[in-house]
Length: 76
Ligand SMILES: [Zn+2]
Image 1 (tube, rainbow, N blue to C red):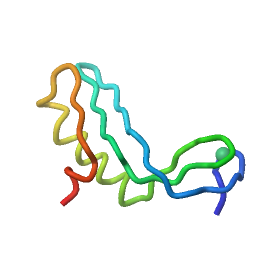
Image 2: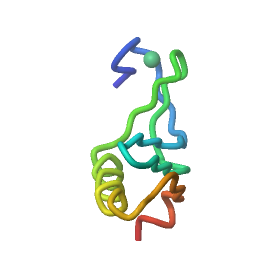
Image 3: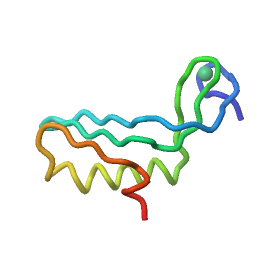
Image 4: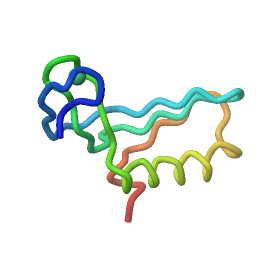
C-alpha cells in the first residue's frame, strides 16, 4: 500500500503529533507512523490513531497552554 496522496513508498518512522485546541496545545512526541518517502506525509495505524485520540480526550480538560507527552510513556 502506497501513500494516500502521491502513491509514494511508505517507511516506518516516528513523528510528533500536534493538536491545537481552543485553550491549549498538546504535543505527543515519538509517535510511530508510516512516512511517505516522496511527499513526507505521515500516516497512523488505526491503533495509534485511537491511542492518540484517547490521550487527547483525557488531557484536554487538564492542560493549560502547552503539554508535551512522549508516546511511549502514554501507552502501557
Ligand atoms: Zn506521498
